[in-house]
Length: 246
Ligand SMILES: C[S@@+](CC[C@H](N)C(=O)[O-])C[C@H]1O[C@@H](n2cnc3c(N)ncnc32)[C@H](O)[C@@H]1O
Image (cartoon, rainbow, N blue to C red; front, side, top):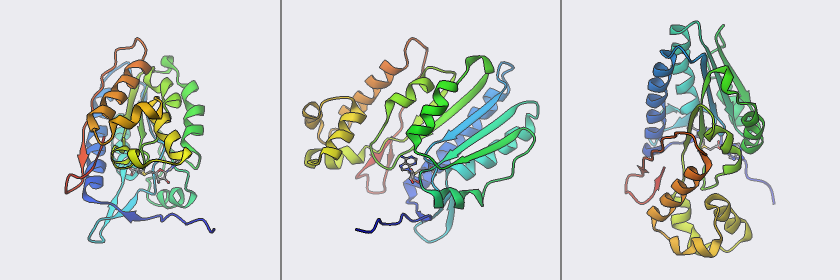
């Protein structure tokens, strides 16, 4: 069977555009606060599943996604704090999406550098995670934004235990809609892998979103080790509130 080619420019629904706006605003505030801190030598932003950066809204107008918004916001920050460095890593498994993204990114400057990559996110984080060094005094922000419920916690552990932030956009609508009808080994394994629990124990969660939220909070609490770490969650609903993401 021929493999279906993924589109490079897809439609972004209003709740997805809200996500872009919220991340952009958050990153602006995050960067300002850290750059004012003398202990911070610079910032590292990683979107390990970045897509093409270009979408159409439901009326067909072009809308920019997270990587382009964050790149422009952090370029302003790099120009303001010229004694500090800003590095951005944008990665997506889909080559065409990365090629499209490159057309819209600002060029590098002395203290501002964008690295685009075309790898599996797990492999990428497996490479970057062990290289994080407390002594470099860089503050990182990792965005983990898959389409479905999949979370590979193992590669996130170093990021939870270093000076930085991890934002996971967790597609709760995936288990809420599909866990009770999951039959294939792949689907069952996906849920077991994400919630680190046997499928039989997950099945009763059904469409109870707070059960998944509680489980994710328990996993994060376990991962962070002894560090002081703040955990927050925020729901994004679609227009008829029939599903949400975190
Ligand atoms: C929800 S989109 C990311 C949106 C983007 N973070 C933003 O805010 O504009 C998910 C992306 O993950 C990519 N993807 C799926 N599996 C991947 C994997 N294993 N490694 C890297 N990228 C992957 C898809 O090609 C898709 O572009």
